[in-house]
Image 1: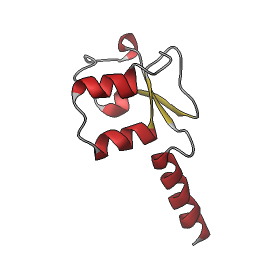
Image 2: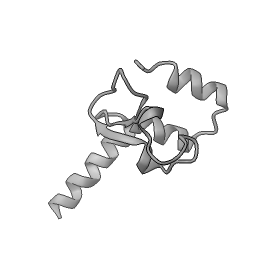
Image 3: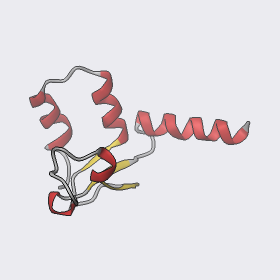
Image 4: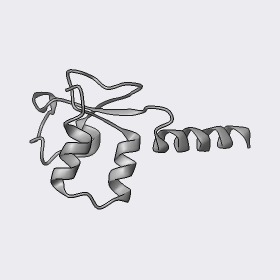
Length: 87
């Protein structure tokens, strides 16, 4: 029971942004065997990290959750999530 509870709390904290969990993407030239636009998500992911990578596009898990829960237009997404990254 305790392990399940800890796992649930860790997921909740990542979704809410209490703990930073970053999805770090591969750069376009690192994606093998297909174009960047037609690749599967698992082919694009370099790592899951505790911070963003200055050499790769990174997005926080809590921001992904926010994007899934709200109906942002493309310009809002760029302003709120992508223009604020270190990459």
